[in-house]
Length: 420
Image 1 (cartoon, rainbow, N blue to C red):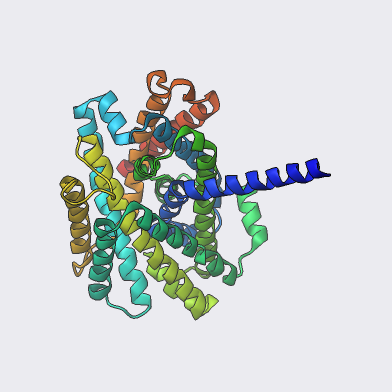
Image 2 (spheres, rainbow, N blue to C red):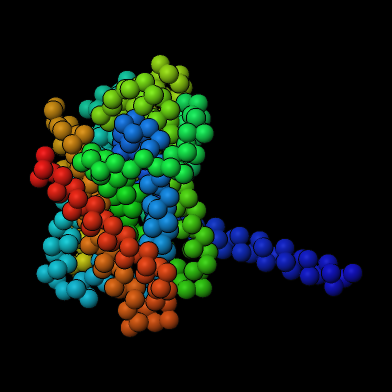
């Protein structure tokens, strides 16, 4: 009896011990996944649902598989190498190649950050707050969080933001979707080969698996100080983050497909989706959608420029990190500040083409992603770097297949553009 009780107590202790370790490790995977559902992503998912109904939901299945495989690679590379992805690319590809890769990524991320502040402006307009008040206040808040805060404090704030993104589940349920049609859309997807459809597929993939995420994920693992003994807990963190990403995307598309698409309502931005929901699903559903957009926008407006400043500084050998002071990492903080300033300045222009910036920033993500993936796959298969932790054949298959498909879609989009 005593032995049985002792064994039970040991199992109970081990369970609580593992849970405590998991909670300590928790962060990079969930935050990276959640921040992926940013203003650009919400806009893209809303446009997809409003225009194509449930017909593009099928894209979330391959997107989830690829996202999971890629994020796991990221976490493993960061834990094993102790280096960020940008640093590894520079060391193995050289400065010239690194310069051109990161120039493209920098331009895309400035556009992406602009999109985040567009989300702040749009969501606050639903609540009657002018963008000339909301955007500058949001910019100051996110700047202070990073410049004056610590990584641990910022991570706690980010995890709280992640929970609020579940607001989209409420919006979707209130829209009273047709679950039978949703199931049929997964079993018998209606694939089209038009320019708009292909662009939307690339946009969905580009926003679900954004290039900058790969750099943030790896840097977050390093900044948190995770080791190989933490790997199995980190893997669960990644899995939960990927599930959360795709679930939020699913419910956004369902909410807009169940209301806007059925009524033939055309939208141009996420704010329109919130306003259009009001007469069909009620004022509360519209406010919940707008609140989710605001949280996602603030969340991503903080992390995206941080990730950009981090990997650019890392690529060219400058000090970087939230836990460093302005004096210790001036290039990092100045670049972070300048990205925010440029984005805010564009948003405050009276006739800024925000929808064009939003949609094409996501398409640009989809076009740049294969370049980043090729670098990642080559690095994670380098035994000098990874030792016994190189990729298994299945993960290489998923990775290379994603590269080939994205390149093929990008070429098809280019051909369609030339024809048009």
